[in-house]
Length: 598
Image (cartoon, rainbow, N blue to C red; front, top):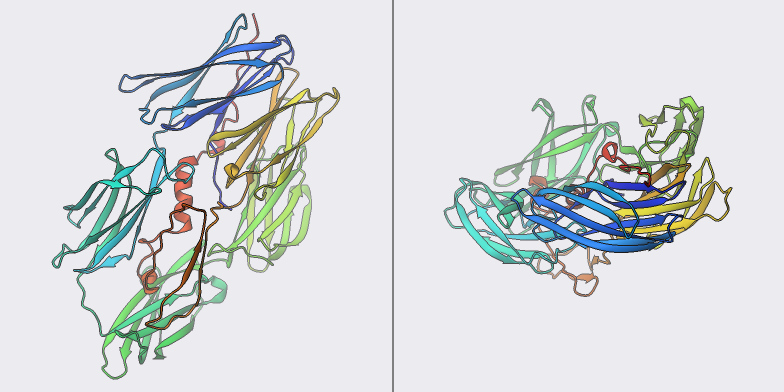
């Protein structure tokens, strides 16, 4: 599950008499070429209907002015969603939302908006990390919008490749995108400038993304040497390394010889060496000759392998860097919200993952919270999760959750939420931390005083994607239950916000809900796991009609040289976080203002 943060939101409230008012909610940010949505809820018992003029106005830094307005009529206990199209080239400046009452309804509210210029991002994939004279560089540019989809308004990009001295080697002034992708190639000359070359992508002269690759002078050896680390990262507990050494001639046939393996610490401190006989390929389980203690969370060791061919005594050397982790798995607290509300249940989820990203099931240990006298012995499930509920007291200021066994001992501090409660009135939201696509979620809202209504907002990827108003007919009711069905628009994470008014006081609560990874309906399978030279590889690709599928294949030894050339899931996560990151401490939850009717 990904750890991403939704955009901040603002709320402006006006009260007309007792428990009569309007809720106006919208994103705190405004982006070019994206729709801006406001949700207005009428809970005004004095007026059967209210008339409002809603404007988004602004003045750009270059002097341009911007205006977009809409008129809305709301009946009592109703909700309206207003959508404002934002121009493709909205320049930086000062922008705000202005809401005014009409036809005798006196209301005025202003909220400042923050301009975010970035609405597209990009990725670059290259066929290998290092090239020689005469090779061809094959690359792929992928352009994405804030939903990680091809941006409809971007039809082409500018792509440049420069050599190690910054000389322009090739430029695509109008590289046409197909489903957000541009494929290109560049033959390297017979006498290139050696060093680090770069590929850069621009839109309207603004750099979107760049990536480097190496051009080196080297001669082809009569044989090739590969040192392939284990796909399972090592930990301090193992006190050793696992990797595979492969030696082949230029026909791809395995060859015999001997290999000298040297191990160095992070600071190039010599640690140990081993010599082994190599018959083409060997899986090496190298045990450290003395205790290796990992500093902090992880330490790197360098493995140098020198292979000598049996009959010619020709040698070749390869080096790889291996990360050794302090613990065999990671533990993190994945909660629906970062702080707890005193006096209310606080659902907790401990997530255990191996360092390659796989869930770690079957991890057994004790979970404790000393101040609450809470202690259980639990085991992580098939998804690597341990779920439990803590019940902080009214006077609890913070909680310290501890998990420990014979391999790991961690403590995680959780602070009290100072903002979700307002004086003596408190609202608590109960919702699942994890949910599946198309799942009906059971939602419960509880208040320490009677409620007349509940409003809710579903926020994902910086936008309000759903909202609702629920009138509570029972005047003495302090809790309310309702259902929400998860949709693709909520993936991979959504923020559910609930609010009500108790005795002229706004109270609210919110939770983050993880809906799982993106579902793009794509699957790739191969007919055989081992293919002999000369044989064809048969791939089966299935996906949604019209989808763009880009394939890439390369020798596994390239991974030991560098991973920078290819794309990985963490690259997608990074792009997503760049679009939607925000600080929960700066969430502000709601910017509230209260105005009395004159």
